[in-house]
Image 1 (cartoon, rainbow, N blue to C red):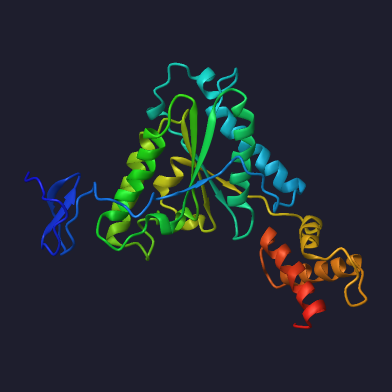
Image 2 (image 1 turned 30 degrees about the vertical axis):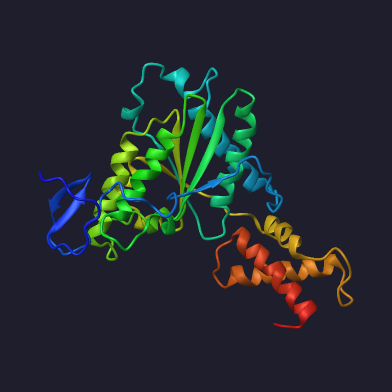
Length: 305
């Protein structure tokens, strides 16, 4: 096949893959796959920072604890870890590559993974292991130029591999993964969807799970391609209880008397707002609880309904 010149535009009937010209059906922009990006196709989360915004409740604590346990199993070196159980395993052939957490918006999926990463970072740093977390959202990957989304997806996995070492563990957090990896049967799927899915599956199949694992989130499990579910374990994120939602709502309530109402009275109003939203069919979530607290604050202080 003919080698391409660097970044040729307005060429009909050709598409570049790995620096070579391939035929395609549609017209498009011809660019090399090693073209420069504006920035990395992910955001690196600082796991050394403590999240002071997170309100601890039992349901979320149990969820985070399970995530830490799963990460520790794959990344640890001690007895009972993945490397201990499968010392001779070809990790590329191991079929299990991570998790997809399913739940309504605001149910604490993304923040829960980040907090689990922080806790594991603190734990494994005592063993000389650095834990990194790359956050990948649709805006990091999607691009209007033909083929560039696949290139950016490829770079996520390349950086996870090339920028690490034996003392590095990387969590790839794909946020709202259903918007990136639509089922091929989904009515919204386009021609490029299959190419991006294939790029993801190829990279995941070669993933060394003792050094890199995937944590993904979705609120539309039904939109996920079956091939995603065959590689990543789908787990429902637990919803907070009504009492927990009232506790979370309290974070938006001033700890002083407001317009003649005590904090307890305002918290009672927030609880009533939560119950009203749930009766209207809203999903129980941390976001809904915080919103109810803010609604009461705005109503009582500003006077808006």
